[in-house]
Image (cartoon, rainbow over all chains, first blue to last red; front, side, top):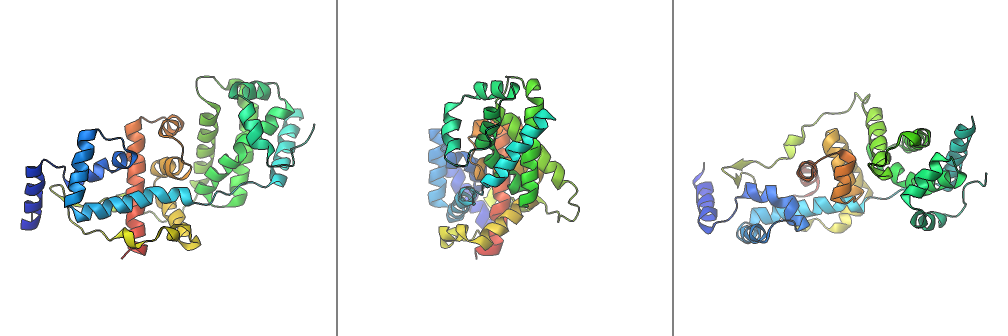
Length: 93
Length: 207
């Protein structure tokens, strides 16, 4: 473990904050606002102190959000009409 | 037989006025209106979901046809214990995944590549700054294609959870019901899928 990592780890430990790995594990619930208030505050404090985790959460948030920007194609009415006739035909055959 | 309504406007109104129990009863009676309602209410949703898996319009249309045929044929075996949508989504996912199986040419990529690396809980790598990636980028065709391809590389369990939750925007409870998962298991799958996609997008677009 590098000196830098040791110091960061020690700092989070002294401040009673989660590690970067724990922040990653909390990311889903953090975004959904599903963490308990104590953990939520601890993650927010970690983020204030850790630029790398800020970047991680920004990226994670955008990754979670872009799914809703996908196009929503729909079937055309002619296909639906054919589908309806097909189902009716199957019913009587 | 009255035929299928020509107006797109019919579906949302009809969908809001017919309860699921009424629709199931109508399907059991093999009523024209119930078939129309089934198509109006579900065909676009099932088409979109199938298209996310298969990417080819014709194949997704075939899946919709197969799924709805299966539903009208087997409606008598449908038990009231779960919702119709749960059943419809499950059949659509299974049929879509069955079609994907013969895709031997698919490049296998380990989803674990997306996992951040740590040393004693501290990040080993520096992340790029996504604040530089404008939201408008998400709407670009090339970006969406890249993401769709990346989704295609995910293992089936992660892909399915991600598509239902983040793309189709189903509430957590519904995703759990469709996939028969506990909430922590569902969250874990969506989370791992996001980590994988984050990593691939970062490598391609964010420097």
